[in-house]
Amino acid sequence: MRPLKLIFAGTPEFAAAHLRALLDSSNHTVCAVYTQPDRPSGRGKKLSASPVKQVALDSGLAIYQPHTLRDAATQRELQAHAADIMVVVAYGLLLPVAVLNAPRLGCINVHASLLPRWRGAAPIHRAIEAGDSKTGVTIMQMDEGLDTGCIVRSAECAIEPTDTTGSLLDKLAGLGVRELLAALQTFQRCDAEGCPVSVQVQDNAQATYANKINKSEARLDWQLPASVLANRVRAFNPFPVAYTEIAGTRLRVWRG
Image (cartoon, rainbow, N blue to C red; front, side, top):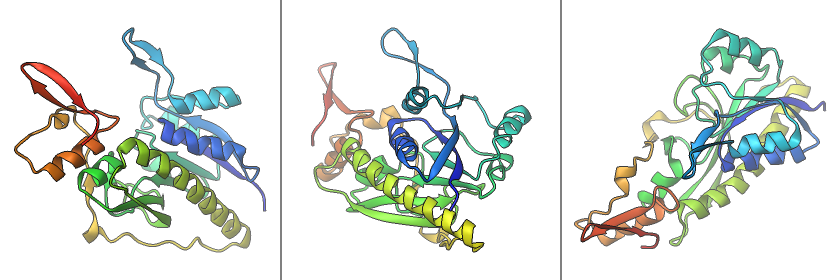
């Protein structure tokens, strides 16, 4: 089977772990990397490259950092790569139809939940906050909706009582890498055999939504039950970090 030609799109460390795995694989070739523009960070507010950009720089890959994928010039540039598949992991930009249709075999996404539960921007935070006992990763074919595409693969992961968003993120990164490589192998085989990839349509009636985390949510409300507060402390570790105020002094709470 011939190697798949891939475009990779992602931004944080969770995504970088998947890019490193693809680069270590001899079954695929990454022809281009898309990531968010450099952002000010630290006290000095110096521009800082994303973890994905750092991996791409170290590997000598072509890097693109558009502010949007909606303009025609950016879309033509992406289409010119003539990729087989675009792999998207926590990228942070919406993909318009022209981009979704650009790769020969479409775009796939690694999502850190068991879809259709926790569609959206903060699936790990919300799973812990809700007191879920399990979560996982889903590899899906991307469509125009918000995490509504057909499921190619999924795998479960228990949420332990001591798990934080940080610890669970590490577990799911490893699980996501495994499932992504297996999914790409399936695409590769089906492409060679001329058969469709078997997928599962999501049940929209079972969908829940993981809204983006607002820093204001991190303030602890002591009128809430202890179990709710403990879940929020774990969910907001390491970001945005739960806190309370005593005599005008803010105290960050790392453990429940």
